[in-house]
Length: 382
Ligand code: UDP
Ligand code: MN
Image (cartoon, rainbow, N blue to C red; front, side, top):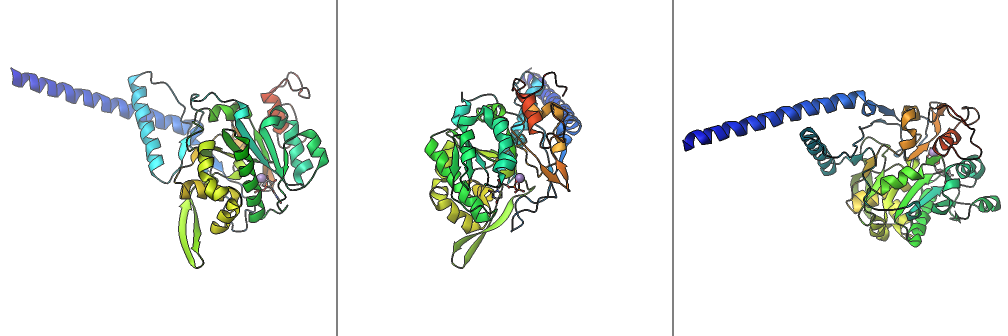
């Protein structure tokens, strides 16, 4: 009697396990089909137009595969439970390997932060005050003046009249590694001084959707170690760190490209201090002889051992911006514009203004996000 009960129980357990396996396999297959058919199957072609830095390492042309968004979903069914498990495993694998963790869409809010908790540093140079910065001041900065800080290299009374937070770094106006690191060092110090919860860096050819940025950051604890952005390379960067006068050491790490923007939590920024505050950022950059955004990645990944969280919501002009779907524009955190094989690389959309009137598409994007802006035409078809 007991023996037959035991056998029945065993058969029942084997049956259960088999059913679970079938459910899991069916779900995996469904996910693969979704991945191929959906946005996730996209390939983001990196620009060939950008000359890159002297070392030719960052901002190089690369092919990069976009991963499907890992939308946070509630566990509603058995199948969902398994899909969550397999997703968790994938993230765990990512975290364990060299690949950065991937995040597609913002997580549910964890912290109740507002735009005032964010410090956005915009890097610019005097020759771009008119050519680039005015467009940003007319569009996204106009709605976010008190959280946006402009880091430049020359005095400009006109600019100061338009916005209060202009910081003359007194760094050289060159596009050299040292000049760019000099600006990043000042950005870092000013952020620490500000006492805000999040540091975000962008270039002067970025549009920032502050609403989605705040939503994204609210999914993470600002007191923990968070570094979020998008790499421009499809592999970790290889570099050598100078240990002493004649001793070098190979290192490899991921970094978020400065041209797409990236964010760092206050908790992590404070830990970076010995390598980033005061004059230390410049000497760290010299130690690995790489530009500012790589130096940030080096301090975070290589020195502190914290992994980059990769987000597909950040965009530089090193990727094909035509591939951002029209219906997804409002969900992105940063956008950009530039050249791609001698052609314009910008967000592809109809909108309030023609491509000739608005080559960057930033004015049209701004009207899409804030249709109540006085200069936005009424009844626009997108
Ligand atoms: N930049 C700078 N000094 C320069 C040239 C550029 O600070 O002499 C800044 C520029 O304002 C922008 C960033 O560096 O924020 C990247 O410049 P750009 O977009 O021209 O080049 P990319 O590296 O994106 O090709
Ligand atoms: Mn650029």
